Length: 94
Image 1 (tube, rainbow, N blue to C red):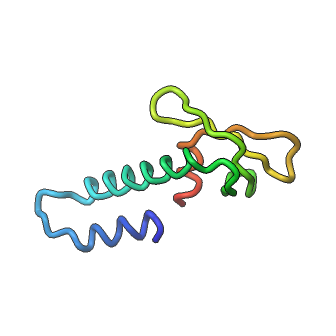
Image 2: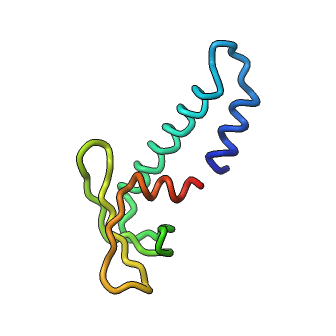
């Protein structure tokens, strides 16, 4: 289920008058981001969709804060390309 579909479902099922749609959107996005980043951390050798095409993850390293540096080998590009984990999350959650 896509992130937007999960958000729509959670909003439709919300019966708490104190929980706003914005609250639901925030927490569903954060849960999805946490799950994506945990999966990304252990995904060396796996394929991933990037803005430049599908590639193979060669290395994942921590960066400042809660982000990762992800080195991806894309077949149509010489060498490897670096992406931030958060930018890959944004691209893959559309």
